[in-house]
Image: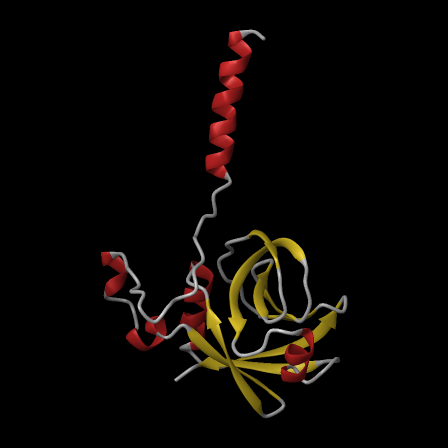
Length: 172
């Protein structure tokens, strides 16, 4: 093959691979991990909000927690929760998730993901989905429900099938 064709193809491949890297890496915080904050954000950071990577979800008077990943979407969600609870009317979709419109948008960090029961996902920047089955798509992972990992356990926490109101609040 002609060298004039091969070299541009190789350069394109390297450029394309670099462009496919996630914009904001997601990690679940561990008790030993320390979050690094850029100096310009340190003064604006609320210790109680950013150090606490869990939120509380309430359904039908029953509360449970979820651990958030660390990305710009969850930081924006925590900032929003500092202003007050978020009430979501959620409905079942395609026998795999409950989804509800947030009423505002969060930054997107979409990457190809295969969900598992208990995953909390941001969809299109303005909808929240709680999965009780698997699905593969480009989503922004927000977190995972603690202490439940099967379809049956997640559905039990979410009040079974059908419409439900889910209240998100800061975990204190």
